[in-house]
Length: 352
Image (cartoon, rainbow, N blue to C red; front, side, top):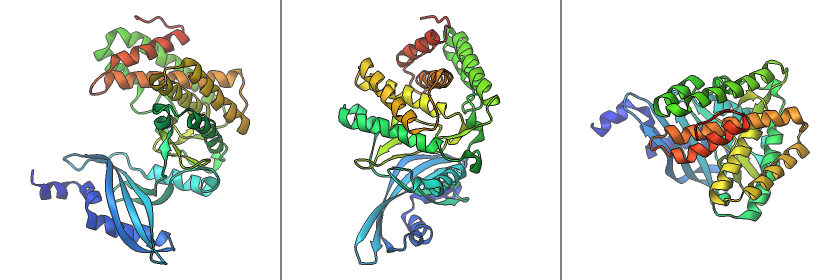
């Protein structure tokens, strides 16, 4: 297909056009920084560049921009764009803006700085955070930094969960419950039935238990918390010796605070066991996380809260297992131990 015709068909190509992007930076970003007088240069890096025929796209780009300061020097900022043709990113902008105005622009626990939302691209533009994610330190076995970031991550979540949820709208309502999180339970069960028939029965039982446990709590609780919704080590960024940030707010919603805790603990353990292969160390980190969280949170760890955390732990484990089962190049050997562990925890009979 002729590239000019393709560009006319899909507006997302403009996000990679340097002349067009320069106009965005000058008109929509520059005025937000009074100390800057112009744009000296920028580079474009694509983290996701999925652009399809018919006008659909999913794009995440960084415009690493050198701004000119009033004294003639340059200041480099990472300006990001997250755009999706079918899943408008307005909720990301709104949630970041809400949190920024609720105190996340202050202190050691922070977030990306929201800049503006584009209806044309269905995209949120924001100033990113710079640093390395927790998984990188797990992968390189940097134990001292891991043991610094893990409790700090817990404090970040405690700060999020302390935000007055009565002032927030539900930024992603479908994501508020396991039952309605995309891809939905019915879709997952169909995929498992089609490809892994032997596991279909235990999958049905697992989802039946975890959905009902969550439903029982949320239907009987007057309180909801603002939760990140995708809590895992790759979304925790070490910015400095004390400062950390969380990224990726696509799934932020009103739900049970235990969800972030259970999800983070499962992913932390999963990544540590894959890269460090030490269960005792994984257990130590999990306890550090919980101690730090409940040391800073207004919530208390009791038997009922622990059961909710465990429920979300199991949900995250089965989601991880499902990812490896149904991705383009399946890795079922990485899924089976997770499925067995969840089945054992829930007293469900499994086939292996």
